[in-house]
Length: 349
Ligand SMILES: [Zn+2]
Image 1 (tube, rainbow, N blue to C red):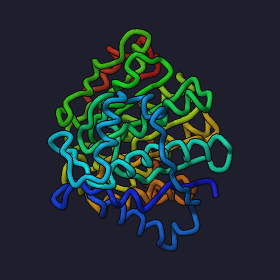
Image 2 (spheres, protein in one colour; image 1 turned 90 degrees about the horizontal axis):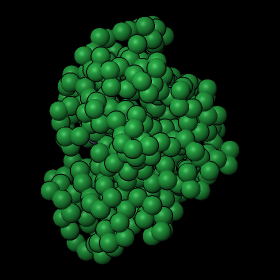
Image 3 (spheres, helix red, strand yellow; image 1 turned 180 degrees about the vertical axis):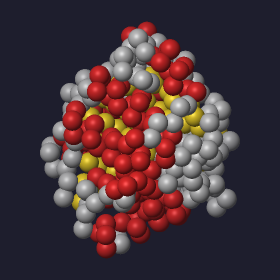
Image 4 (tube, rainbow, N blue to C red; image 1 turned 45 degrees about the horizontal axis):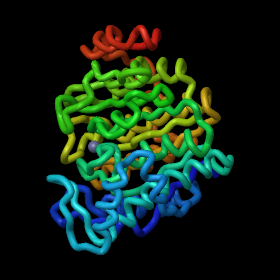
């Protein structure tokens, strides 16, 4: 077994409210899917640990961490218009971060090549001193810090294919040339950031790569973007580990999103990244769950990713060939070439 998932009952106990789309059933459906025969013996199961206060300060203000700490045991605390805690949210949030560290340790000890942290709450909107967009602590940003501080990585690639732009992750490494942040996202849309022109600043200039996309993009558009933008950047950057903010709100049936990616499309994106990881960094991939609000979509897309990593792809061969060859001309490619071409010569062409 070359794949592990990190899972725990605590992630089902964070409950922002019965009306809320980011609800425990999301993970219940995914955990149930893992028990079905085609997946049951494919993955190791790892338990999370709690991230320490000091580890959280790598990405968050101490006062902010204390504010979240104080919500423990409290009924409901509203942190922003759509981010709300419940009695177990703090414990879930620190273990969602710790799940990243456990996953990275397993990868760097050579126990498995690929880990999927199946956690809630999600993280990519969380900023240095504020919760936002259902997110409390920035799981993937803290994973990148851990890779650099504890595992001696000098180059970390974050791929954020969630429907939304990961503003929190972008700002965490905006001036840091050790981290490439690559994001595809519906635009204009929540949270409003993620323009092509946001490319990083200072020493980090060129290391933020945003691909804003109009609503309605599906498998051919995403396949083209990954091949024309992500692949050349990754090959030039040569990361030592690849982190994925895996949001499944790009699924065609998602109630919050406007994209039309199918589970086969998600498997194809996973295939592109897996090939990169094997070429560049001994296959090292840590995925972490972000958004995705269709229970069917979460179940099908999680399975698609795990089966792809396990070499049991759901992509029919003729469909794979189509996606390998498709070239959708998107308006955004010209702008990306113009803005980022001098940093990444192969981009957009
Ligand atoms: Zn999202």
